[in-house]
Image (cartoon, rainbow over all chains, first blue to last red; front, top):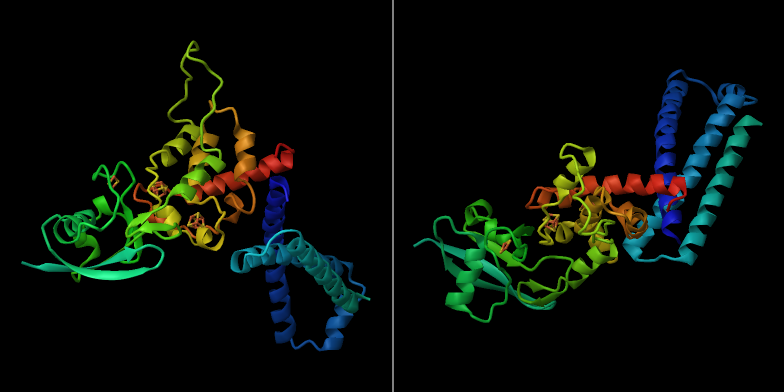
Length: 112
Length: 237
Ligand code: SF4
Ligand code: SF4
Ligand code: FES
């Protein structure tokens, strides 16, 4: 992988970390509000179904996770196991895509 | 006379600590202790030093578990209980006793393109670099490196990734990156960017805490990360 590609991966991880920091705060605040307010599952669903705002928010959250996690995992694997190169990169790409798919499936489940 | 108990690494990669009793003297440095052992007790002990005044960078060792320049480390500061453990630097192959092979350490300076290339000849006038310009200040902050290897020995990422360029080489690259006379900025950024370069640094700051010259390689490495990222976005990299 070229120096440019490695640098862009680092940038993508920094940028996705910034998005995640925001998303996690909003997500936790929403959770606390929903639980303390005693909202039922049905009430929560009634708010998320058809809400493009929540859909966009959680789609962004999922996208940030799907970018951030595999890049970090790639470094962890490199540092702890010493594995690197094309097979590891391909594996990380697969993990990123799987996270994106599972995540979007969950988002769709509360939206549609 | 008060005596110091000194455990010294003997052997190469394989070896063990051997304990010596050394007279405790006023204003004694750790290098004085090692020198006493070699001159008065066991002449086969191998260690390195040259200047004894903190200039040459050859005397670094692990003292009670921390990398230090031994010629300017007072026993008083590190051996309050009269005990010393002296070992070779970490993250470098041991040749014998306290002597490490620093080849990879300096090879990485070359890999990080740690040499200056200018455009002027001897017929040109001097370059004028304002002392208070931001670049010159960055250079000043990192230029006093004596190449002792203390930071390299203290860095966890060097331990995890043997090809990581390490704090000293990257600090050198940062000083050249900020040298307005240098003409190989992009080439150097290519050399220091990525998984084995500046982007591998975890910002642990061990290097900055341990550097005997109070250099903060971490800050320079962060600067290189930003510079390389900007160059990648501009399509320069
Ligand atoms: S700040 Fe970076 S270079 Fe310095 S010790 Fe930590 S990981 Fe190593
Ligand atoms: S940066 Fe500091 S610790 Fe590292 S080699 Fe230079 S003087 Fe030694
Ligand atoms: S002997 Fe030169 S720096 Fe210590």
